[in-house]
Length: 422
Image (cartoon, rainbow, N blue to C red; front, top):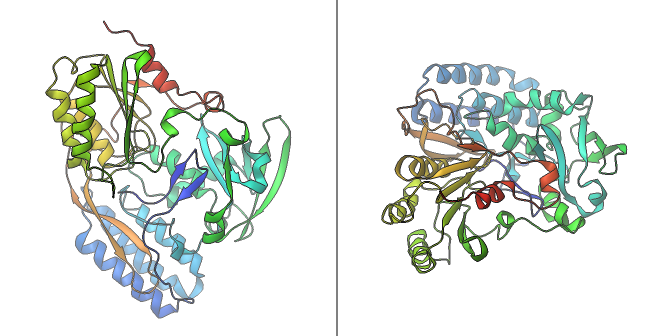
């Protein structure tokens, strides 16, 4: 499971994962050396990859970082750690910068790329007037120039990860200062074109973890009184469905491929879902994975089995899957199963997972900083017939566009609903 940053368009906040523990208030040189040695040994012994030379680069990089420690500030060590983990070229292997222990400050904004342009989709209430604005410059660089500089510090399987995680990275004040994009570790200047067309400059103070989380937050739909798209409903629920009777379509929203506490298991839920499907016999079943960042892909098998058991449903034009830039790990494997074993058509954006890499990942806690780091411990080629694919392609590309977003339109779902059965 990738726990770095999940952009939540409805709530307008960044969710953080991992149990917060106590970090030493001041890390000594010896503390950092011990942490780096621990990390180096773990990666050398347990990290799995199809590209052995990346482990050698990582090992060499750790040794160099240890020599540089006397010259570096704590935030620079964290940034260097990110960069070295990115050398492993694995989207499941990273420093979780969404944790309190790392100590990065961040802007009170939630950002999102629409057609390669960066928009503010949510913010702390005091900055509500900026929501809907387009960021054109960060510090002394254009948004695209800053984005390119950030990529060296982003663990990824493919370039989709940059679109997914980049907006969150762009709010981290220490990281952007480390990359020489901004001039201050806890402030950031942005140039923004407001929805009315006026260009403004705004300098923000970076917020600590607790202040950032507490908000209060507001978002585009709330501020502009726009209807929230269906797929952004019930964001804290792992799996839910709704029958769209007028379209004879069963819509199933799947956010996590894990059993949710105090909820029916996925297997029980899918059994219940298909009893309803058998009762109404819909023309279409839509499985929405676009905000699903993973879990246990074995838990997706009941869905595949249920579809395959119904010949009347498992036909071209009846099974639809929506994926997007957040779709990751087990959600991508579920998409692979659906493509390979059912008559599913996939629409939206490709996900950010390489289908022939990580099969399992674990987490470690560094002994002194308590930094949580995820890393791949088992690899598998889920699509060996396509060794050159770095993502699972969609059958119909439907990227998110700001003009649709601000009207509350879900163009991927609308496309599916408009298709006539043959």
